[in-house]
Length: 491
Image 1 (cartoon, one colour):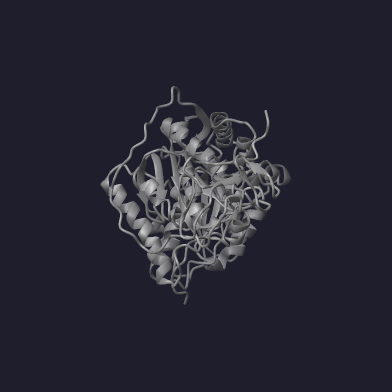
Image 2 (cartoon, one colour; image 1 turned 90 degrees about the horizontal axis):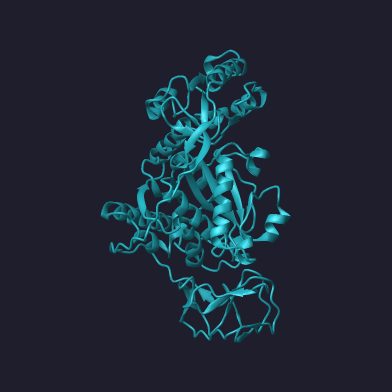
């Protein structure tokens, strides 16, 4: 079968996407290219007048800033966003047809004492304040895990917990408390300094009810040798964690975060729709997926809003989207300046274009709930969680919300890993082959002849294996970190 070299995604589109580097003079159907077009980039397949909408994915991704002839490259030099500020929305639900899975498969997970489920059996070290980051890192480095079913001790450092005011300080406490509750951690050592704003007493209140066998606390100003004491406490936590063994768990209890970073022109064609197909498949089995990156919904938000299960969820979705737009405006920033230099190099020209590709990770399922930043998952199905597009902040928000693992699509590549296993999905085969030490799954096969059903089934099986203990590339290399959203004053 002859390889397809270009793609018109939707019949309404007036641009097509090059699936390989194309030279001037290449005949793309009835369109002859007037200039070279790189892989993943767009070219006009019809004349587009100045001011006319440029259509991709069957929707506007902006308007032409000059006349564009068929065969010309379309990018930031001749295309501009249509986005402005906050908008008014009406609830006009359009619920997709849903199907239940014929059989609900199992993965091998850890059933905790409180009934929750984890896919890792780890020890986590959580500093209450940045002043004790190096103590936490030293403890993680020095502690020698001996129990065969405990997979390691990991410190999650951050620069906050003191000299913050108001909402920033509350968010720091809440995100850290959510990490303490995360079921992938069989044991958690909370390391405090003793004089920080995030006092240990306040932090314990934020954590609330929790299995006392899971958590130990240490205030280093009260210890003559905090390293020796910390190692003793980790040994206690390991002894408790060692009692947990993997057992069959229905995939309906799996919670998966959805994220993209370093996008390219194939993100909305291969990896993102593939993750959407996976999400629909997981939800059909009774499972849960969660999408964040609110600024990367701008321009495509109505596709999510019309799938909100009821008026209440719709209202909270509108509040989340307009709240982020107001956040941009309050800092004197335009709401459409999101695609990074890497995104633009990969031919993401406008935020609408990125958003129309990004939101495909949510598949076609009904939106069952919307959480604020620092919220935790409580309803099955497709969830939306407030958070920015920044990769580190977003994967932290997904982990803190309770995602067991994260599917992270990328067209440019990144070694980033969250506290939860982070599955890197390449949009193109060249990246998957070049950065095999970063990439876990190649979605580039979708433009090389593989069907979406086949790729989704292949991804689903790999996720089951990862949930059952198979390491991701980021885990193998020890890439695990967090970042907490900040919007206010530092004292």
